[in-house]
Length: 174
Image (cartoon, rainbow, N blue to C red; front, side, top):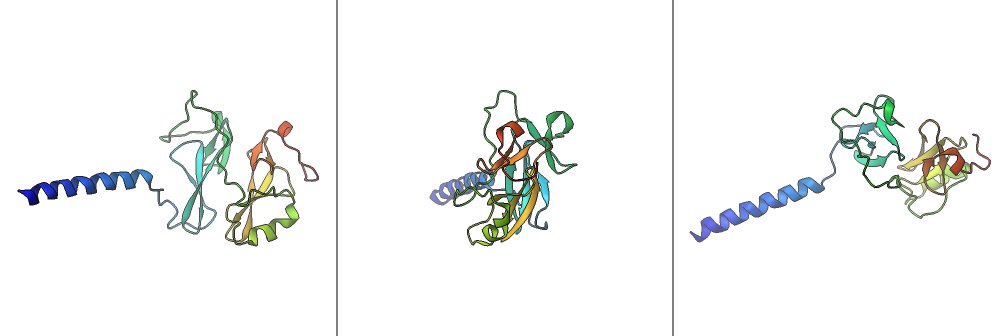
């Protein structure tokens, strides 16, 4: 009888643990993908970029959603979310969770992108591009050019794309 009770408790504990692990596990959407492949996230305002078989989650800027047809964050009216979760109007506005530079330095000199990305701790660092509507994402030692959504410019001080009136492009091309 004690063995039966212990077996039931063990099975229940394992089942609960499996559920907890499943809820916290990042989907394995990039295992068979090449680097720099874009994949739609379960939430319509997010997407994955595959890097080394791992999925890196990015969020679109406030007011935009991921458009998998164009591989860009786009205005909500232009995006069909299908069965992906659409952020509600009552959701709190949060600054997008684009990865910050690991050392929290501001990388606003495009000419330094190769050196910055070659550093051992540079994975996911963001570096300004010569064009203000672009930026570099450091992946495995290399700067990978990325575009802001149409109408937005990259702000290296904030580490995200933002409205033009909020971004100082300095010497970068607008």
